[in-house]
Amino acid sequence: MADEQHGGSCLCGAVRFRTNGKLREVVACHCSQCRKQTGLYYAATNVSVDQIEIEGEDHITWYRASSFARRGFCNVCGSALFWVADGADEISIMAGLFDEPSDLKLAYHIYCADKGDFYEISDGLPQYRQGRPGLLTAGPSD
Ligand SMILES: [Zn+2]
Ligand SMILES: [Zn+2]
Image (cartoon, rainbow, N blue to C red; front, top):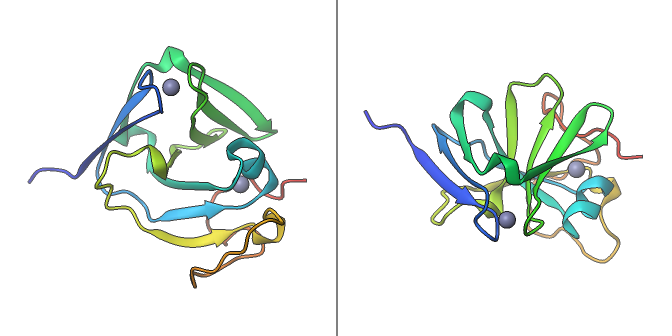
């Protein structure tokens, strides 16, 4: 039985990846760290680290935005790529990086209390003021 596979890349293609297995539903994080990094919000799926193969790892710069997690971005084109909590065996991957059709679906919004003041969230999906219980996230952004 062939495993589900998905490919993706940053804007310039210096970083490419391939995932094996089912991808988690997409979560949109509106915390201020995600807002600053992306200019809007961070929409990401997530796999365990043994489900992803990354090419061009030397083009990834890891920025430690908090005391317990780091954010990877392409050091050629600046695309936001990954979010990883220290010691976690999972990696969050920006949903917009995937080749289409991605088969991804946005499921809900977190850290809505910190969202930018220039837009509304009006897609009818669940909104959490902060994190969602059981979901590993950046935590309160202040
Ligand atoms: Zn790039
Ligand atoms: Zn966030």
